Amino acid sequence: MHIDPLEKQWAQIVLAICGLFVTLIIIDALFHNITTPGNVETIDSASLHLSEEFAEDNLGVHRDENGNVSVKMVAGRYSFFPKEISVPAETNITFRWVSIDVLHGVHVPMTNMSTMIVPGFVAELQTSFPKPGDYPMLCNEYCGLGHDHMWGRIDVVEKDQWHASKQTTNGAAGNER
Image: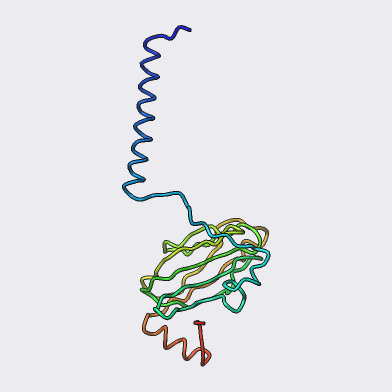
């Protein structure tokens, strides 16, 4: 088989460029410690209500003994559960999401909070809200005919007032469990 020398040179140049790009990607991944998702947490969507973490009584905002704030929410049937939550401003918050039916997404405009919620997997992200206010939570993945009505609300209050509002909202636990 005859290959023209000019064509052979161009093939070598293309292979060299491809090799350069692959090398740069590998070096960048090693330098920035970028890896594939290896710690994907799975969950049975059909028995979420029986799980300890995502049972109806355990949904919402929680604070552990170290002061870390976490939110456990369920997306499904054109709604977020719970629909409204209250969290403190300027605090690192861990959100854990699961879906009970189909693919959903959650997006909070004007923040870095946006992720897909895939049935059978736990979506986890960390964020903080720099200033108090009302933040809408929207589903950003088309999930069916009721998709337009799938929204929620995050009430972000001052860090020092968050404790006070919890005690005065309904007398006991308030937003925290």
